[in-house]
Image (cartoon, rainbow, N blue to C red; front, side, top):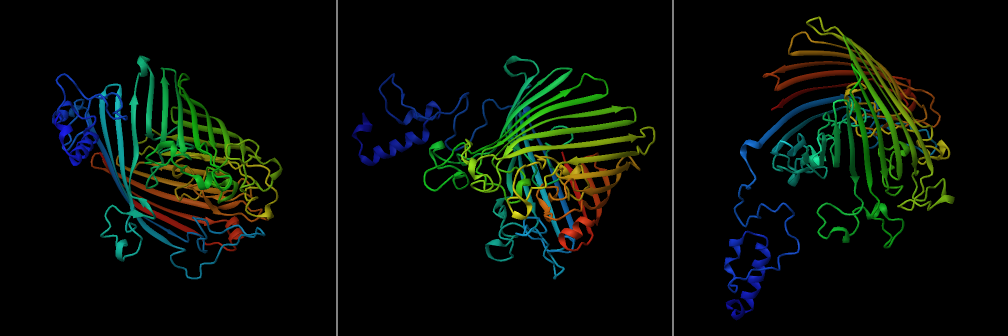
Length: 570
């Protein structure tokens, strides 16, 4: 054969060509001289996964054989929102990651005074996103969807300095704080009537998880990026009931994205999952979320939604604990949640109640679980004991009346929210709080808190008691006005005040006995236009600081917040 007679260089180039074009269409092999009737059988060890109907392109990409432009669709939206906040820490400096003070050894926790009265007290910025959804209907029962998102804060690309590589006007598509502004919000395949079973569906890939009224699982579109989850969700729907069963991998401790050698490579979180130095690594140190959610639709006027959720975090006890036992998604825990949401709408009256109870076990802050060393190595995958019992619960209630007969459609509603706290939430941050014994701060999971407890986003559904009254009306078919008043309290005075994003806003003193955080008033006007494809919205809010802030920060100044935003979608 000719190839045998060529030199070493020719052989090397030929071998490289084989590697490059492996898996291509048959004509690509025409450059090789084979005996008549023979073909290459030693194909690469990693062929394209089934169904193998499309070839990898050598140079010019081709439209796939399965593609039909009639089945292709797009959706998109754009939002620009300038936002301001005065007295962010009520007359004090920000002391950390959104918190206005820190925990001291003696539990006094006074906030640092902002002598400048400048940027640490007041804030203004502009957020923007553009989301592009790309969909394709392979068949009426098989859909592909991918949503790209460009989320940015004006001027925040690069280093944040108007110099050198950080020059925001030059750094197109750059990063902000180490994070790329371009990301993937969703990417999944949806298969209906799976396996020929009517009503059975599967959604696999990155997806939104939304249930009820976003109290525990929502898209959180108020934020500039929002929540999405990697996993699979099955659903089975009948006329009387729909059931959902999902598994989502929230954190992967074994392999990093893009790792070239799979599980043979070093663990993604070796620093967090190592019990000691050396080779003692735990590839099972992951975080998983399991959801079993049901909707019962057979009772006229009612929607009844019982559910069960399991959150299992096998990471080392020191991995995610910076804000005490109330740290959102605290590491080294198994948390079960059973709950039910019931919604009633009959005539002009609507009513909603959601009650959830959480139980399980969790490790405290220390690598050796400092308050329970005697039972170290209890058998957890990370080598840490879960020495604390979880007993937490929450309740949300709304009752409203809408006068549909009026052209203004006025609605008056009353609300009462509660979520448990724990007097030992700071036990591993300071000995002043006593020995760690329980972990009873309610876990808020992945909610859209912005729509529930006042628009200022200064309260999460954890360690709180909050009544509110809400009034809405429509002066025209395109205008909507809302007035909302909320009174905020802590459920447990020794636990912390958690802001809407679930992080600590103010650490409570070990001697605190005040629970009244303050009172919030919101006024929102929304104008729809361009046939409902665009909206302009303005909100102004004011918070009257309560006794709790004054006692735990040393003094208190009222806070004002507001924004204006324009939102377009098609």
